[in-house]
Amino acid sequence: MVDVLVGRRLVTREGAMAEAEVALQNKVVALYFAAGRCAPSRDFTPLLCDFYTALVGEARRPAPFEVVFVSADGSAQEMLDFMCELHGAWLALPFHDPYRHELKKRYNVTATPKLVIVKQSGEVITNKGRKQIREQGLACFQSWVEVADIFQNFSG
Image (cartoon, rainbow, N blue to C red; front, side, top):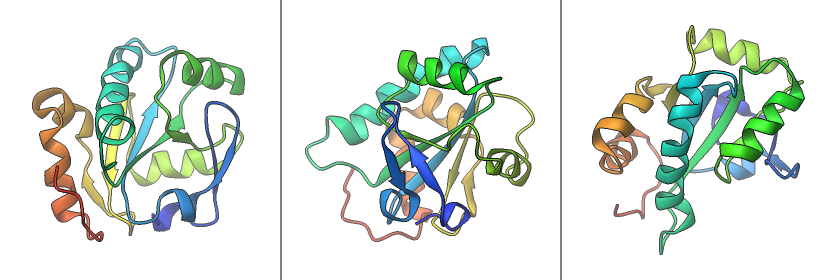
């Protein structure tokens, strides 16, 4: 479980709630800071969706990976629209959770989109997840797992 999300409830694009401790346990977590009104976010999100689907949705053995969307949208409706239109089947911090702003500060997010890959402790593996996915594709995941300090039975 990612320590920075202890006690938080996360939401799916369908509106179902999930306890962060359960959903993120023993996984590499990508904190995805983005907004639907942001052209670079709209450009990168389908690529992230394909990446996530290949690792988790279509894999014979799903990878220990989860995305948590941290919205920079202007309203809860904008966030929901963006999630329903372009997002994968990943989780999100609810729009009205003020912790979104604390995470933005903690991980020094000054522009969107930004994909920060973190260990269970919340320590940053890389704050260049977007660039790594664009340049390396699925291969970058194995390097994240190798430094993530999680129990591994994933063989990329």
